[in-house]
Image (tube, rainbow, N blue to C red; front, side, top):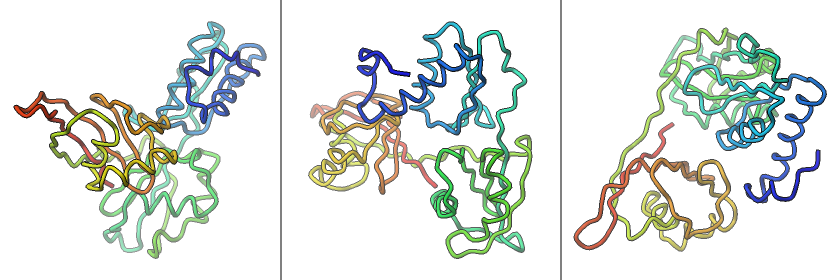
Length: 263
């Protein structure tokens, strides 16, 4: 499907390919009465798909990531007359543990790297929950058996796996390391340089190079203004959330509270 040029004004140029794909999913559900079950979408992609689906009165949409607060979710798009309440999202839990049930001492990045190292695309993997003695990884049903057979090592540690129904998922709440800062302005480069403790000059280059996202949307303008609840991510540096803007100091600097994602 070819989108009208005006639609693209709402999105970053890098998102054009995904916008076209999402528009085709919606169109095929409306015109050809198809049920489309997507792979896992990040929050920005979820927003795009939801917006396009909500613009079309002939389709309905349901999102499911395995639990209420899931960040990554699969979308099910169907003709408006079809109920999705009892439609399977097609997701399972890959339980990963070390022989002897010892402490894994691995983090989110270790597990994600091991999965990608098997040739798995990121969009086949949902949220990853790392416990002291195991990890519960949400995956598509289509990939569960493959991963159950082939995932035998995570960052030099031998592991064993099992497939569990989504009802047995053990969720690890999101952990944030809070920090309080005073900043000259709400500019992206200024706040990020303080959060990561690098010079503003060093933080500008990755922003302009496209290695930064704000709310999962590419952001290449170092002067972009941040606001409360914004989530900022840098490739190689991690991500943080702007939790609170708490007034101005006597010297005119802005007090902000930041939460850096842990794990």
